[in-house]
Image 1: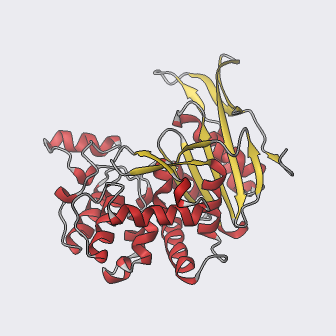
Image 2: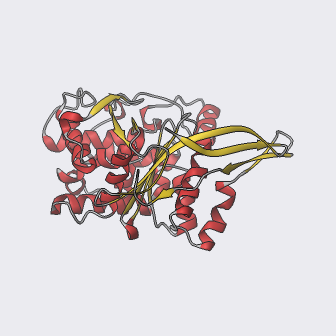
Image 3: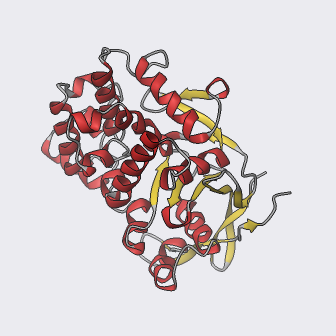
Length: 338
C-alpha cells in the first residue's frame, strides 16, 4: 500500500497529502530501499523509453545511420517540442528516408508553453514532430528500416519492431516475455505494466550492465551516457531531468513518465530508482525523487543545497504572496524487506 510521501501546506496547516510507492534496486536485483509497496505494478509509460530505444542500438541502427550522442538521447526523449527538439527529429527522419507523416504518434501542441505560444503566434499548426514522443517513434522507424520491414503498422504489438522492443523490456527487467502485460500508450505503442522494483532493476542494469552479454553492455552504456550527457534533449527546459543534471554535474540517468512515474539510475552505485505517485499528479514528483536521493546518501551537501527549493518549493498565489509549501513527509525504509 502506498505511504504518505508529501504534504502541501497553506497558512501553516496541511491542506493536501500525496502518497507514493518507491523502489531502489541494485544491479543484482536486490531491493535496497523502499517506500510503500516496491512491488506495486503500474504502467511504465515514458520511463520505458531507454529500453524501447535499446533494440535500435543492438540492431546496428545508430551506427548505420551515424547517430550522434545527442540523437541517441533524442530517441529516448519525452521532449517539449522546442525548436532544437523538432530540428533533431526532422534531421533523423530525413536521414533514414522517412517523413513526419510516417510517425504514428499523433499530433499535439508542444508541451513547453513558450514553444506552443510561438507556433500559435506565427499561425503554424503543430505537426507530429512536436509530439513529445516523436523521437522515440523515429527510433522505431530506424529499427524498421534496419530490420528491412515496412514502416506501416510499426506501432502495433504484432509488428517486428514491437516484438524486438518486447524482448528488450523482458531482458532488462528480468520478466519473462510471456508474463509481460501491456496497455496502449498515449502515442499508440504498447506500454508495459510492471512492478516498480522491476523498473528500478532495469535502470540499475542500464547504468551498471556488467552482468549482461557484451552487445547489451555496449548498447546500455551508449544509451545511458547519451541520456546522462543530454538531459535537455531527453526532456526540455525546466524539467526535473535537467534540474537534477545541473545540480549534480550530470551524475544521474533520469527519465520521467506520464501519470507521475519517474525512474533514475545512479552509475557510481549501480542503483536504480523508480517512483510512482498514487494520485498520478506530477507536481509532487520532484519532492519525492530528491528526498529519496537524500535518504540514500546520493546527494552531497552542495547538491542538496542547490535542490532544496525544488524539493520543497514555496507556493505563491497570483499576486506573488507566499501561501504555503510542498514538503516531503517520509524517509525511505532500508534493510531486509518484511
